[in-house]
View 1 (cartoon, rainbow, N blue to C red):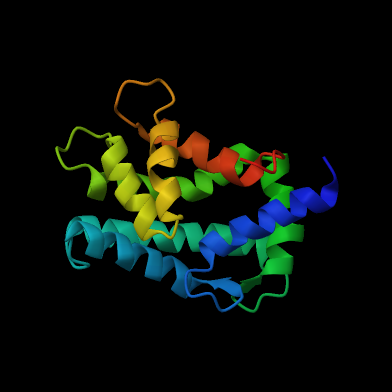
View 2 (cartoon, rainbow, N blue to C red):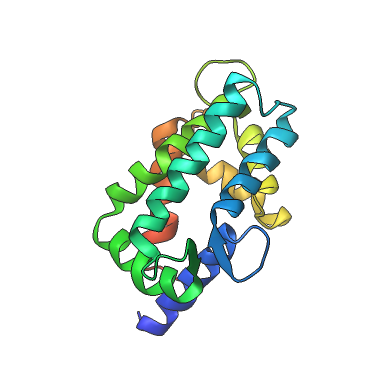
Length: 173
């Protein structure tokens, strides 16, 4: 694949983090994502689950900033994301999974309506929608997360899919 195609794909991924569309990723974007998930599932920020989600969002932000914010301004520009984060993530996708895991785990606990530790494709679809995925893509994306086809999406399935989404060279993934 042409490197420019890969960079363009990753730039689109950048937009999924830039919740407010201001051209950079910041702590506020991660907090906004957490707030949106809490609102969607009717969970208060002061609850244990709400606090865990905000802590996970902060851990995710800290990890992202550590690998991408080269100038230390507490903002990750599109350029920093494409040229700093992506290279490191591509070279070490398990590291990316570990950066994302606290946030994703907390999201699962919130979306998991029956408390069995996994989410259904319908619950995943709600999360994807509130985090800014195209509405028409939410259902197919949620279904694809269920990699073993058992109707239940585990943390490992989500973490692996999340890391692959940001690190695979396939421009159509």
